[in-house]
Length: 207
Image (cartoon, rainbow, N blue to C red):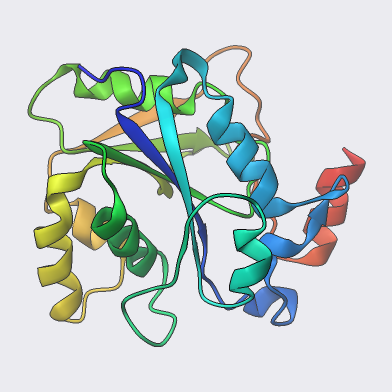
């Protein structure tokens, strides 16, 4: 059972932003505030108060991220190794039993994300809970950067990345991973929409 403040929230902002022309995605404005700030605020507003500490994984413009008032940690793996590098940094720095990862480019993720992922841990064998969302084609697709995981998975992740592994699903399939669907009536169909380009970001703002 997961209790209040058992979860540390990690905003993943360590990517290259290649589809945004190399822009630092987490610092792009959405409705007047940087995307990463939106992610932090949504972590702070999670229902049930499950998310206590927050931190950011970033690899450049560290001072700009530090101005948001939470610890900022760069990848310990070199060469922009992707989200798993952020996972590893978070697990290394996490001081709570659980880590919740969210990307910086999805400013509308659900305010009950933590609560619904945490419910998967009522089964004590669960190691990772991963969100899934219904997309425009009607398919329910996992959202692998939205994960709640036990911090004792650090050793496993270190071994996986040291062997050259970089894909989230290849690592999570080695563990007892529960897929948690976010497709109830009333769930926002845009909640997991990630803004990879400036055009997508502006389109989401106009919505």
